[in-house]
Length: 168
Image (cartoon, rainbow, N blue to C red):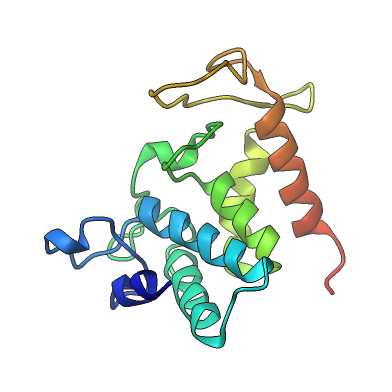
């Protein structure tokens, strides 16, 4: 935890290349740290300091509508709008929204990312696997890119139910 707290950058996020001089946060690194901090909190290990760091990291994403450059408003990467499973270390808006759902952190700045999720629902009610990441896999979890994804559908439905549900 001390390392994560020490490595949080001025803009609120994290970057795995800080030890090499990087001073700008990465969406990919930030979501990984946020998920870890939240899991630590939910397991009973959180402190006021780790919760504050998590909130600052979440603010980093929220200030950017979960996928936009703060400087120009343009999407940071096309891949952030494509849903993968398993995501490995990669970021996408569905993964970020699922984090906010688990954290119970509703915010109006999530709306654009929620619209992205809604726009990707297929006529049969599913969401597709869009961006399988390379790397070792013990067995395939899905039928391949462009095919309906059980995992993305589950995550999208949970996110939308949470987002659209009653507050409190």
